[in-house]
Length: 86
Image (cartoon, rainbow, N blue to C red; front, side, top):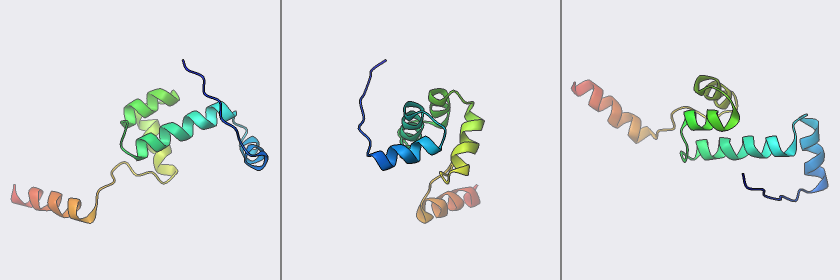
């Protein structure tokens, strides 16, 4: 495992302390959530990184406002047209 050093402003460190989560755990969670949100990793892989099942991770991410599906209006319209043509 690689070690990365991150410097935090005192006020940010104080806010992080209020979450009762270590800086290491918080950083890991935030990185994994952002990689998932960007579509870089799957929900299953994200769950593995955080020690959660895929379903638990999806529910957690959804609770934080990160949707399972992030399609544009045009993508949804194309999907609907495909389904209707079947």
